[in-house]
Image (cartoon, rainbow, N blue to C red; front, side, top):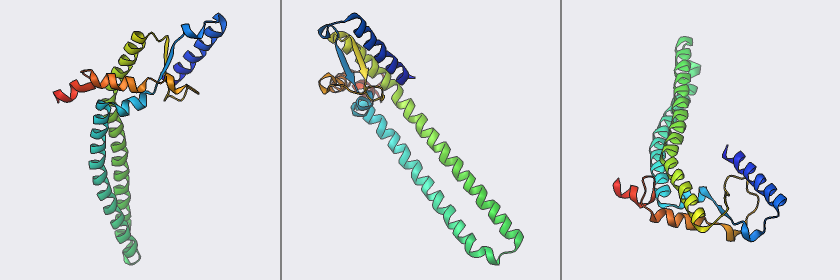
Length: 185
């Protein structure tokens, strides 16, 4: 949805400029890479470390479960020829059931990881947007475009304010990120 808004906004700005013939000096544009800002700000790094820790812990558990399932399958394959029909069918059902359970756990893990990432980063992103809005207004920008969405095809690097946004964000105590949150936890 943001991508569509960004494309529409960029098109509208281009149309307005073309129709009104506004001089370039009157129209100040900046670009910010919100994904890079999130990854480089202190709160974003902390959130990424928390997600990484959760991921590694769950990944170890899933890896052990997968290895156990593979061992059981190997064992079954070796013994299936000499087993009675009922015993072989029961073991097949057990293996299928375990494989399905493993698949469910893996999918649940992926969803949980995405939810955790979203929970940890959403308030940081909101605060970053507020920082961009405040910075844009303070510095007199007419428009600040987001570059990591894929809607921006070209921007001169001199218009990129991402580093300034990260620096300002890290210096501000806030509920969502900055230095304030890490001191509280």
